[in-house]
Length: 120
Image (cartoon, one colour):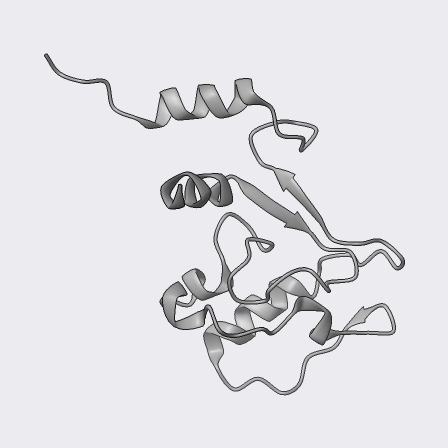
């Protein structure tokens, strides 16, 4: 079951609304990987961190304190260009379909393509 969830999470991404449902470090909302992965940090060590994306939104705009870490500063510069839509909740989307909705056929196709064929 854990392997199935991890596979599903790799193909799911968040669209930022109010940021209250998105974990800053461990959710995929800034591209295909998490910020922890982009910084080379272990997800296992980050699982107890509860920082939400909403912690960096003030009055509908991005708000960052002075950041000394150069890698994190680069990541936050990419975050700053994401438009925020006031009044919208965060939304998980499926990366394997155009409309962002999960479909069994898209999961099946990806599963077939991503696994090597057995050698007999």
